[in-house]
Image (cartoon, rainbow, N blue to C red; front, top):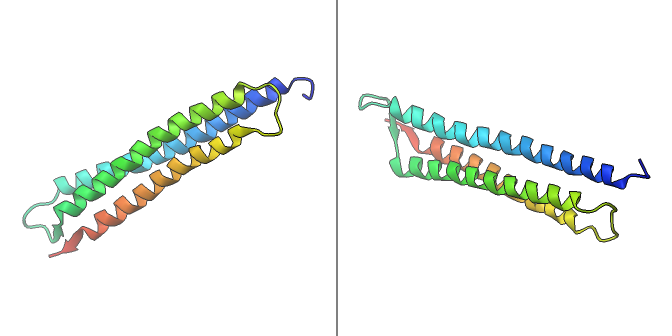
Length: 130
């Protein structure tokens, strides 16, 4: 393997891309699932329901989940950029600037998770007993 550093770089690029895709799929599932759960819950509420819903808070929760989906798309583009940057070099250099791109990939994904948690918290606090 030492004779062919390009193969190691391709494997590394594929690994980064796969990790990125797995994490993106997980967050897209969480954020879109939360969005659907809130909408389904709202469709089942009637005037005789024992639960009161704060419409502004529910709207804010939906916007937060939508923000999480936006950050998932940003993470997708960052993952693609990282894999391309790592694939473009055959031999590692002393100053491998593509490592900081991992922060660009992890940052938006963490923000997507924060938006998901905030959206769920806001949705839960927006529902009270009558």
